[in-house]
Length: 81
Image (tube, rainbow, N blue to C red; front, side, top):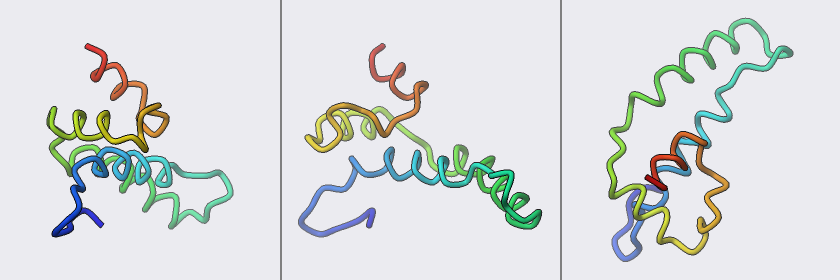
């Protein structure tokens, strides 16, 4: 998903990272073991990838993501500065 020979994929890094963060948020209805896993995963995801300006530029320039709805408020702010 994050690599292809003939298709640029740099624009997918930020949306994928944000999606993983969103789905790893614990729900009150989750079993305790799932909640622990989600909390661990939620804390690890932001530190796993080094996000550079090129990732933001790739995402902004991709027509599919022009409204930036997939980004967190922190990432949107970073783009507008």
